[in-house]
Image 1 (cartoon, rainbow, N blue to C red):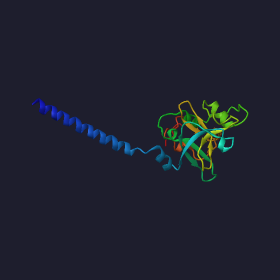
Image 2 (cartoon, helix red, strand yellow; image 1 turned 30 degrees about the vertical axis):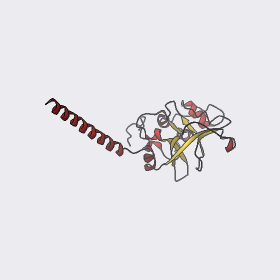
Image 3 (cartoon, rainbow, N blue to C red; image 1 turned 135 degrees about the vertical axis):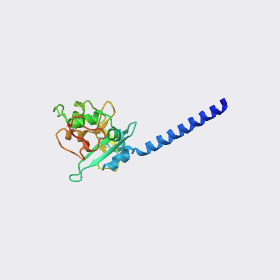
Image 4 (cartoon, rainbow, N blue to C red; image 1 turned 180 degrees about the vertical axis):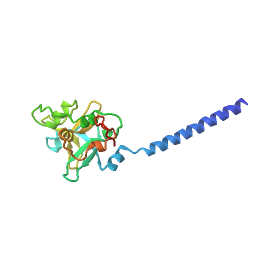
Amino acid sequence: MIALAATLLLCGTLSTSAAQTTKTKNTQAAVPAPQDYCTSTGGVVESRYPVYGTNNPTQDWILLQGREGFCQYTQASDGSRIHVSLATLFTTKPSLAALAYYAETPWNGQGNGNPASFYCTQLGGSDSFGGVSAAGGGWVELDTIDVVLEACIFPDNSTIDSWGLFYHSDGIIRGIDLSTVLKYQNPYAKGKTK
């Protein structure tokens, strides 16, 4: 009798586990990957790597550790572009890059040189391996329009195109209005929904 009860209990546990596994697999299949989401919203997926010294000849560039997936959006009317990391685009949780984009904080005008880099720093981000460094640097993908991308990276690792962020602070949309594609909705917009 005890053996029969143990067998039934074991069979019930295994069938429940199998059902949960099947349910989990089906649920995961229904969620699009960040790359798929990028292309379904009109973007192009790019895989970029960090490089230091991009103001030097290509053979002197220093390839740094890592790789980052970006979604590039291009505006058909003027050819302008904006890039956002796939992780920043796809998360439904707040990220510092998305909050910076939505906030449209005016540039304080501080710094001599690249205003997009100084603006990124003003917001608490960094594009320190590029930006204001005389050697230059950025996120590189060869055979693209923007071979070297200057991106603003925030402490939570959320990442957005420094120039796109800078222009947006002045109400200029480059590539696409990210508020129409970021999965994290604008917390500053009252009464607006996607």
